[in-house]
Length: 520
Ligand code: HXC
Image (cartoon, rainbow, N blue to C red; front, side, top):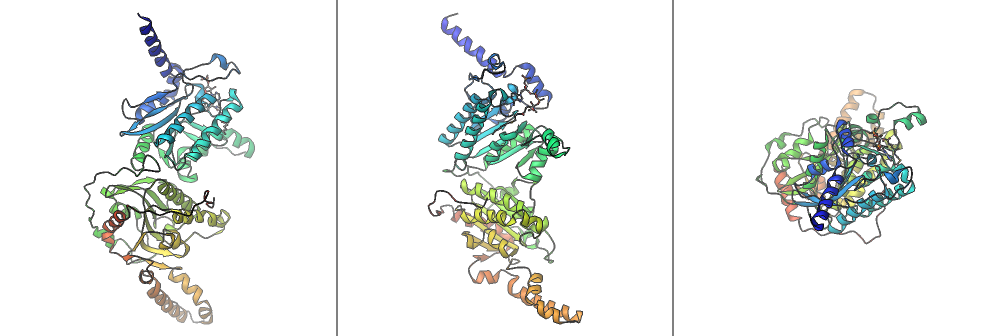
């Protein structure tokens, strides 16, 4: 064997050893927990043979607690680049088989390197987390490593899309990297996120709680909203990441890919002419409206199980990616509350940062009243949604379907917040409040003065009819130009698409500033 051949053999052997991470025993242990290894996850995520790995031979530099004898090529994270459906992405996948994927300073350097590359080259960053947290033997170096990752999450926020997959433990301060990224996908039963685990919760608060109850996928996808998706298993988690990417651009200077569609632009849907119930207190399903207007009826929902009174997600309209925000009359009558406002605001800001037009479907009776909401700062949280819509400069098309009352009318992408085109169905009611509430306020004295209940009811019905005649329709708003047109529901798809096509070249800006002061 020539020296050159010997050198090549050494390389091949070292690569093979590096690919085993912490060794076969630990790989088997990982599989026994129902989890894949970092490399197996990358193989599922990326196009075949597209992965190019960096820093495969990096070692940690720790010499405490016997770590000088514990070396694995590549340390506890696999990093590099590849493609998903032919589009470039950068990837970090923590390798639990090496010191439990715990973060060393050199691991952080590997991760920061691909984060910088992703930002410089304008490609999404995907981080797959599976780690015991800061590498305890490294002390403050490990903390410094986290800090440097967080700093890049922050600097590159709004520059390239950042997606976190939580495929194992993610605890302590480590949770803040996913929290800083755009989307978090968790896997049921094998992943968890919390600041302090069940043992600490028990000792500090005396509360008994399991890992799954405290920070499992279902909890974060429904109660806290920390996770946008709760996948049944790792394969589904990976599929979600891939599908999500298909709706979003590579970076903030590009547009999302346009896809071919056979769904006719002018496809009318008569069922929408029948969908609004006669009784204004009766609900209907907003998902039916979304399916009716989206290409092929397909909707990719974000935060499906969190704050279900508002629906957010992506669809294609004539092949263009759009963000849809819609009130859901079936849940809490579609009212806006703290969580709905947070959910909507975060989504609107993502769409605006990444040049994705926003279509809003409005049927909102107002903000949820009560001490719980007020003490939880519904004012500040509601302002987030207002702020997000008001600052967004992407094309904004709004359809007022039915109720659109008070502050929530303004918030939900009204003309007054620079919405480009606002349509209303003939069933729209744009008013300060519903007829019942209005009559109670306006005629309180008169009602009090009447003792006969029949007479009282008569006056109430009379005044209600008067108010409804004036406000429970879209025409007062249309007469003032706050609505661009009143449209037949069956034509909604066509009208929204035509508006979006006209808005494709939209240019709008906000006053120059260092940064805004969004009501956090
Ligand atoms: C060093 C670690 C480690 C860590 C796990 N390991 N966590 N090594 N630092 N933080 C090692 C274990 O020693 C073991 O090594 C291997 O990883 C697998 O761990 P196991 O315990 O055998 O696995 P499992 O039973 O699945 O339990 C996983 C675990 C547990 C729940 C994550 O390991 C654990 O509780 N680890 C400590 C978690 C923690 O307290 N981290 C610090 C949080 S504070 P061998 O050699 O046997 O394979 C923090 C601050 C961040 O992260 C602040 C950022 C701002």
